Length: 382
Image (cartoon, rainbow, N blue to C red; front, side, top):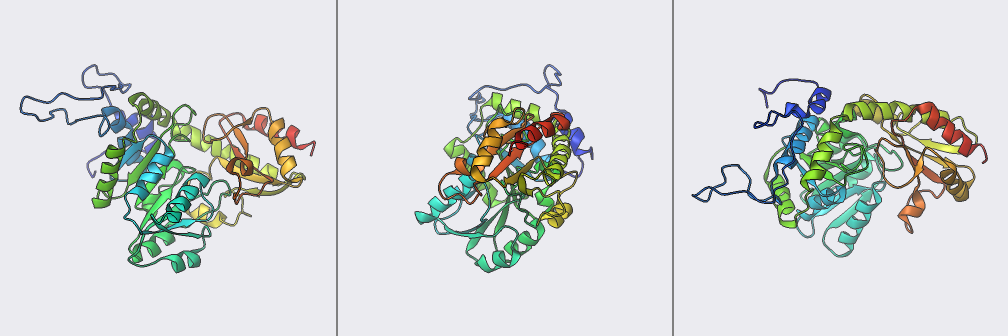
């Protein structure tokens, strides 16, 4: 990689690495829908591809861009963020030990708890950002994965990646960072010592709520990464070529969308702290946030598009405010160009750790004054 040009990541994204179709000289990368590829007379594959479950040129375009943006050695696309996350754990041996945070994307956590209940893995959940608890949970030689989600969804709790990596590596474990809420625009976990970076690419990487996708980026192409490659191929957890092409198109505007949404989220978070109906605001860009110092050190260019807040009126107030919003659409997901609101606890259901009076906001690229006015009219009746 030493001989690659040192263009700014925003330039690499905007030009999709400058890919030009060698046949037509098209500057828009083509879609390769073929499921299979022709062998030469000697049985070899001169085009370098065998079957689309394993390789496809359309995947490789987006994977190459993600590799460069995250500063890794390789990347793989998956059919969803969950497919990417579960692949990491499916490559573990039975009985391997995993450490994960108490506050994280609930579907991954519940899946890990299910694996542990069936004896597939041994699982310890530790408070986000509690370095002492993390180090106490590590089992040298047995802990294989330390999972980090920072900022955490929906609390925005922060974890120091570098400190976590130092402790995990000393115990012989690998660090996997779910960086969905940052994207490489705001944080590059590999630079802080992470071994793998995971994205639900459905969210900000694509940015248009029209693709279901996941991604893994590795710091080193090693034996464990080869397991991940083989697992994806065996299970067929891949995107269709058209979805991969849409993802690549979305990433070309990543460095415009993410900073814009982050600036708006910061303003909205600051404004919410002044509202009498609001009891608490969770956003790492606020100096009062417990993880602000970590966020300021670890993130650059903003603090992300996701924030949450609690209402003094309890769960019923949260339901009413979410229902009265006009521009913030009441829907699951985050990271699109449109702003969303979600009353998170009922979505997660019984056993959730999310307060029942909490609303989660995903801030899009609309005019921030319009978004603030929408929140104001919904809150003023509380």
